[in-house]
Length: 261
Image (cartoon, rainbow, N blue to C red; front, side, top):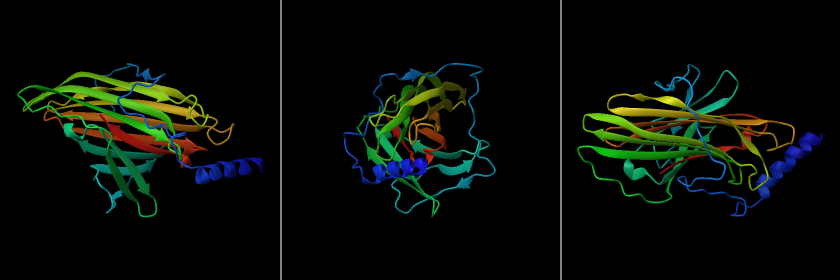
C-alpha cells in the first residue's frame, strides 16, 4: 500500500508541478558539462555496430502535424524486455544548431517531430576538399523537463566529390548526480563502437547506458541506454540514428530529445 501511495504522490507532483526554470535544465548541446566522461576505446574498432531492424519491429508513421520527416522510425521489444525506439534523421551542415523533439502517439502509431533552432551556425562553402563537422546529443528528460543523462557524439570528416575520410571523433556521457529534483543517475557503459570508411561516407557510433534507484521509489531501479550513430557523406550531409532503450519502474515517465550542433 505504501508503494502505491508513493507512486501516486509522484504522479501528483508531475501533474500539478509547474514546468519552470527552477527545475528545467536546458543545456546547449555543445556545452561541456561537469562530470562529463569521454567514451572508452576498447576491442576491435575497425567495424561499427550496424543497426539491423529486427523481425518484430513495428514501423511508426509520420503524423500530418510533424514539421520534419524522419528517414526511418520504428520500435521493438528486445530480448531483455526493453522497449527500444530507433529514429534516423538526415541533416545538412545548415541544420547544425537545431533540436528535434520526437514524440510517439501509441494510439495512432505515429510520430511527430517538433523542430527548433537553438542557435545558428554558418555552413562552410563547398570546395574541392573541405572538412565537415556534425555534433549530436541525445538527452533523457523527466516529465518536468529536468535533464537526467546525456550522450554526445561528434564527427569531423573530410570530403570531395569522390571520397570521404575520417579526421576525428569524440563521444561522451553525462549523468545528473544529483539532478535539480535530487535524483541520482550513474553511468554504466560509455564506449565507442568503431567506425567504417565506406568510401563516400564515414560511419561512427557509440553506446552509453545509465541507471537510477531513486527516480520513483528508493528501492527500484530504472535503466536507460542510448546509441548514437553518425554517418557523414562526402557532400557534407549526415544521417544521425538515435536509439534508446528503457526499463524499470520509472521508464514510463521518461522522454528523449535529439539536438545537433
